[in-house]
Amino acid sequence: MWKSLPVTAALAIALISPFAVAAQDGPTSQTSLAEQLVDAFNGVFGVHPGMRANHPKGVVLEGTFAPSASAASVSTAAHLQKRKTPIPITVRFSAGSGQPSVPDTSQMPRGMAVKFSLPDGSKTDLVVLSFNGFPVATAEEFRDFLLAVGASGADAPKPTAIETFLQTHPAARNFLESPKPQPVSYATLPYFGINAFKFTNAKGAVIFGRYQLRPVAGEQFLTQAQLDTMGPDYLSSEIRERVRRSPAKFKLLLQVAEKDDKIDDPSIAWPDSRKQIELGTLTITKAVADSQAAEKKLLFMLGALVPGIEAADPMIAARSASYIVSLSRRAQAQ
Image (cartoon, rainbow, N blue to C red; front, top):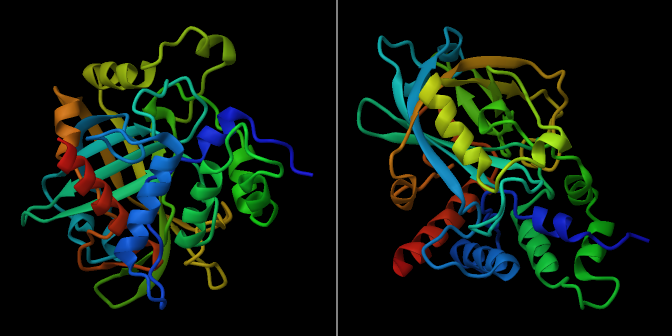
């Protein structure tokens, strides 16, 4: 029998950017399903007016993106073409919880979102998580996952809703049980795209892939003794100080799917043996002076794509719908 989830594990399930439910053929609209998902996050963490439904605690920084020599061979996307000057980017690192005051010392994946500001005035976004894989295969299941957690309080009868859910969803069980070591910095974590995209180059050649962001400084984690000395906001403080001294850099990679890899099931992480193509380097140079004011104006949309890149997983459109719901609600509360 599945053992009762510890409190820390129960908190860990909102470690992912808000996911809306995938489009379906039934009578319920995608928008209403997105609302249900945001409601499910609120059911787990409570309503915090003016804040994101998930990942409300974050820090905003700025920098540039320079595409690699191999990027244009992957896609005609504007930000992947050779250029004389790098592309401005806005970056938001975040804690994986729906609680605005969650301590940075809590065990959880972290989020990273990147907005590319293109020369023609358009923008395109990237949203990744410091865990390779997702608890469930579809957005419907993710809604049900959150609802099960919300119904599984300390006084809930056994087996709880989440215990029953995990019995039939091994990927969710793996997500909760997998270790999530505490990083030295937001800049010493690898980040992984949850969903797959379709990339088309100038010759019309198509590949499918998922993004990865790898820290140039290398992956670095704290020992328990080191963690015990850290304050509740150590990651936000550390990244501000780090970029004050010198830039923080990430390599943007594309993990390429092979013929039998599922591109519409984010619960299955592709093997590390899959081909990886370097798309460029993100260089984060400074922290925004008033991060809280800046992030209130920011919306990162996975569906905000440019020609040369298309959504390959239907969950991408659904995620975007939930972001809009969350933005609308926090805007109304301000």
